[in-house]
Length: 182
Image (cartoon, rainbow, N blue to C red; front, top):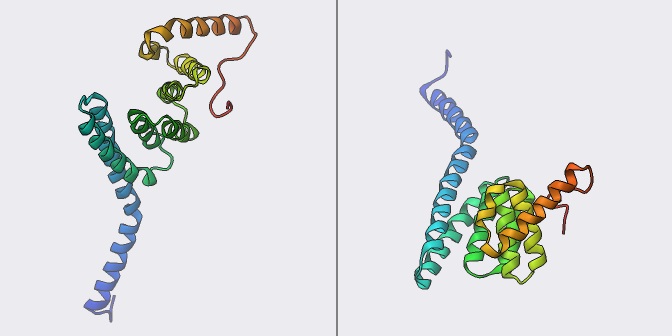
């Protein structure tokens, strides 16, 4: 690089550094968002076990703030809206929980989301939708049956047994995938 002085070399070095930084900055943001997501998940778990209503409300505010910061950087990750749905459910905000769980399901269906959607429907007073989503959750992950209230376990197990019996005979259809159903 004959004829180039130290200023030109410094400028070229700065340009290369800027390109490298621009290339890795999104990954740094994603890494920070994933750390916030883990922090928010821990806060939701703490809130779920907190017996004091004032402390629970405070922890839920913190969880909502942390998860709200993580969500924009993770647009294809179903966990931020899922956890925000759990925040709403813990606040007894069934409508907010339903909206957030649906947003999570639009990204990716996960059995635990179907289960919590069932809980939110039950909290909203929609037992039919709650039963439908409980069946879907247990159909996808049979181990979730024990997570249902005791009085719901037998009806859900019977419904799944009936569905399996009918399907083995080449009739009927399994519970619809979300969001095909309304």
